[in-house]
Image 1: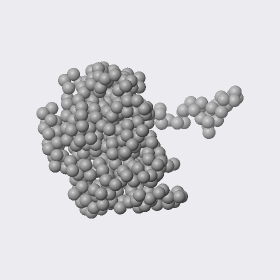
Image 2: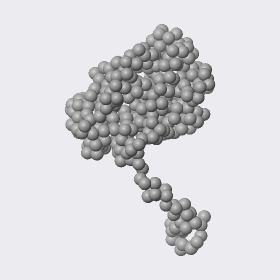
Image 3: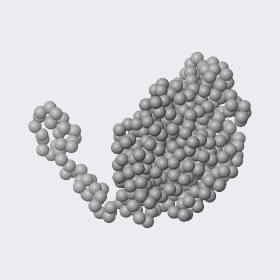
Image 4: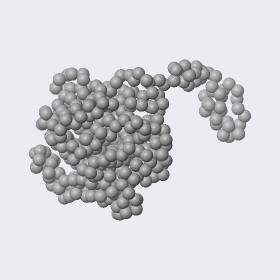
Length: 423
C-alpha cells in the first residue's frame, strides 16, 4: 500500500512539470471534437468536451495501468465509457496520442513505440473522417479493432454500469483483483434504476477494484438542472450506497483533476468497498453552447459561432484552417476536402511541437511498461473443468440434428424430421 501511494506521489510530481503540455493536448482534442461534429452535423459536443481533462489525466497520470500499444494485455486496467454517446471524446483523444506514437516510431524506428497490428488497431486522425458514416467510427462506444481501449459497447446513459461491475467481479473471482475497472459517467447517467442496483451489488460484492468517475455538470438533455429534480450531490448519490467518494471542485484544472484521480486509484479501503471520484465541470466548456443546449447539438456547419470556437486555437498556436471564417461548402466533396484539411491543420500543431510528441509518446510507453505480464494469484479454474476442455463441443458430427438448417426448416413447416440429414 505504501508503495502505491509513493508511486502516486511520484506521478503527480512528474506531471506538475508537464501540465502545460497536457493543456496543449487538451486544446488539440477539443478542436478535433469540434471538427468531426461540425462536418458530420451530428454527435454530442457538450459532454465530450467536459470530460477531456478527466480522460487525458486518466491516461497519462499513472492512475490507470494500461498499455495503448498492446490493448489485449489481460492484466491491464479496463476502461468503460458508460456515457457512450460522448464517444467523440475517446476517438479524438486516441487520434492525438496514437499520432504521437506514430511520429515517434517514424523518427526512431524503435519498436517500443509500435502498436500491435498497427495497420488495423491504431486509430489515426484520418479515421476521424469516417465519424458516424457507414463502415466508419460509430456514434456510440463500440469495441472494434481501433477502439480496443474500450471494454464494453455502450450508448444510453447508465448503460455501462452493470457491465463494469461484472468485469470487476470476474477479475476478483479470478484472483486478479489488482486489475481495476474505470468507468466514466455523467450525473444524469446515475439516475437509471439499473445503476442503483449495480451500486448496491458492487458494495455487497466488495468490488474495491471498481472505480466510478463522474462528470458533474448539473445538466443532461432537459432544460432544467439535474439538481432541480434529483436531490443531493455525488456524496449523497454514491456515498449513500456505501462507496468511498472523493471529488474535485475544479474539474477542468490539471492539478486538481490529476491529484483526485491518483488518490482514488491508490486508495485501498480496508472494507474492500467500491470507489468513486467526481469532477465539477461545465457541459460545453469552451464550445460557446453550454449546459443542455450542447447535448447532441453541434453548431451549424461553418457557422459564425463555430468559427468563433476556432479563434483561440488560431491565435494561440497559429493553426491555419481551410476556409477560415467562410461559409460551408456547397457539395459533399467540398465538405470532405475541407474536413480533411482542417483535421490536418490541428494535427500540424502537434507535429510542430517535438516536446509534446516526446512527452506523450514516452509517457505512454512508460505507463504501458507497468502492466504486469502475469498476476501470481490469478487462477481461472483448474484448466480441466472449463467448457472449452470438453471435446464434445468440437464433435460436430454428433451434434443434434435439430441444429442444422434443413431440420429447423422442417420443424417450422411441420414436416417430419429426417434422421441423419445435415445441411
